[in-house]
Image (cartoon, rainbow, N blue to C red; front, side, top):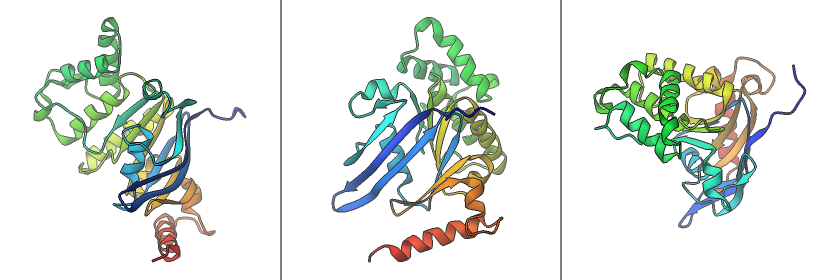
Length: 253
């Protein structure tokens, strides 16, 4: 095994964000390494989507800095965003288009040269299990397939960083299994950060986990360390609850 430190592909330092008088993100810092899957875990309303929107440049933080592959997101947004693939919680699909037409459009938006669009399209479809449905209209496909299409548009330009906001929400158990397998495979070649409120999702596919509670990071470490946090293994759910309850008790009313 190599002793070389993995390359940092995403670095966020001291992020804060308010809406009016309500501060929803408090001094959040995190890093993502090449070849890992990082889970941003938290209850609904914890601030996960707001954090994801800041990491992808869709929302400007009030304070803090973000670098994508060493590029400052605020100073060079176009250059930094070229290294990001993003799937928001609601996939940005044109349901009246065929899968092939939509992904070709996504490839052109990402600046892929016309002569290279076909190869990029075929690679994305193969990786996401969409080869057999390229000619079908997106609106006629199941939610599981639509989620795969959303992931395909996020990876069609081979980004270094893939950001997935609640990628399995609303899927049935078989669809969840398939999408989780795909995410784990993507983590072998890219850096992946995903938000979720599912402990089983973190346990099955994530190398590391950051727990967000009321906009504050209350835990950062490996999934295995969270499972045995406090000295006893097999306590993932109990440790998650304890950490969030402890943070709740320490938050001023």
